[in-house]
Image 1 (cartoon, helix red, strand yellow):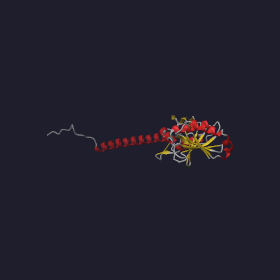
Image 2 (cartoon, one colour; image 1 turned 45 degrees about the horizontal axis):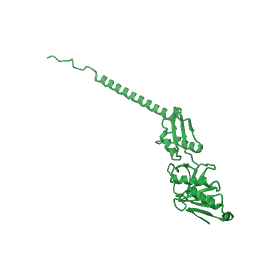
Image 3 (cartoon, helix red, strand yellow; image 1 turned 90 degrees about the horizontal axis):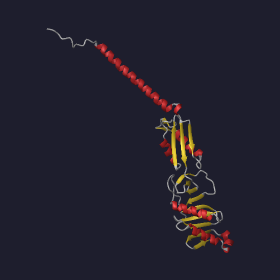
Image 4 (cartoon, one colour; image 1 turned 60 degrees about the horizontal axis):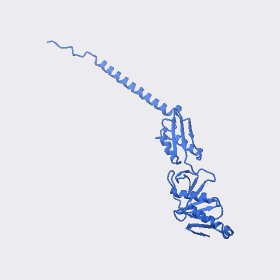
Length: 268
């Protein structure tokens, strides 16, 4: 009887196990080295000073306070994403997040945020022109000429400014319209039309309804106007009565002129 030996494995089982263990250990070592390499690379990219923002350039600020604007950027940079990753790192820094953060305080025409690798940011700003100051309760807001709230007050000065106080004290949100733009334009018409003879200081909106405005002046008297009627016609009637001799002699004692009722003018 003959045995068939050609298919018999004469390898030492211990050696086979040792070789398998070596391969397993080698794979484990390779995985550990890869993990260390990945962790090291991530740490280098996220925490290395090389990728920390060294300069943030802001271009285009005119009316907006540079100090206040840059403070928003600084506060954003000093925060962490998911409590772990510093936003001062150029890879973690998010243009969209910063744009949204700035938008909570400023309503801008355009705002572009560009990353300049490895460690610079450039911010290009186009402001909304704001020469209208809106007071509502404790809020002081700058409005655009289309009556949208563009920012909190930051000390604008100039003869072209118009100050409006909301008698109803309705809360205002940045980026939202405050009133009908047509009514805003009418108040601007009243301001420019009156200035040849009267110096308006504050327009009190919603004084006795949405179309009623009380205009306080440097002249010592107030003017009540109707936004649903033609501003020019009301101004002409006021200028006409101001030329009356009796009115001239009594002007220092007059509290207000009421122009809201068509051709009739009331004063007290």
